[in-house]
Image 1 (tube, protein in one colour):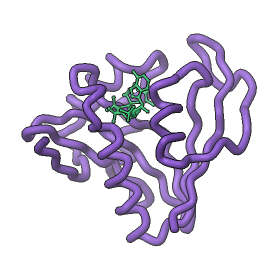
Image 2 (cartoon, rainbow, N blue to C red; image 1 turned 90 degrees about the vertical axis):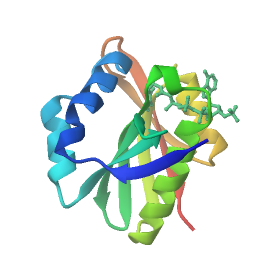
Image 3 (cartoon, rainbow, N blue to C red; image 1 turned 45 degrees about the vertical axis):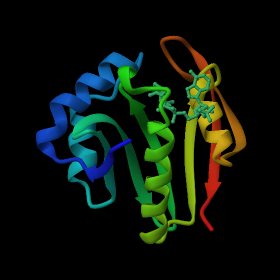
Length: 147
Ligand SMILES: CC(C)(COP(=O)(O)OP(=O)(O)OC[C@H]1O[C@@H](n2cnc3c(N)ncnc32)[C@H](O)[C@@H]1OP(=O)(O)O)[C@@H](O)C(=O)NCCC(=O)NCCS
């Protein structure tokens, strides 16, 4: 499998927003992605499959911690190990940046994402009741220690 990882820039926005809208019930706005791409404290890591964008992960840095607010693999590329590869590569990069702990929230019923995080040794650290809308749902809060 030919995968590449690169940071997004503004020219990638249209495809990112397209994948986001097709995948999430409350998608991030275009402006949120612009802010993440342009911020010195954030990056959007793209995974390219045979040079086509297959997905992305957004990270916000507050060293020595980081937050993963959004990770999506476009539907046609799911189930092939690309999400895991993107997360693994991103964790390597975060380690090099001095990040020691990564936090995220995930919908309680989002089994694919929860199994991905658990299989990579993310640990549940709490629950935020009614955190999500459309549909209203609890968030499972997880963290990962980078060693
Ligand atoms: C969650 C997501 C990023 C996973 O990406 P992916 O490329 O399909 O995942 P991978 O093929 O790398 O699978 C990695 C692991 O995730 C879990 N997983 C992935 N798809 C799954 C499914 N349909 N059912 C159950 N577990 C699944 C498995 O543990 C899998 O490991 P395995 O193949 O060894 O069993 C993808 O499903 C997605 O984009 N979902 C919509 C957006 C979303 O919910 N993002 C997370 C927000 S918190």
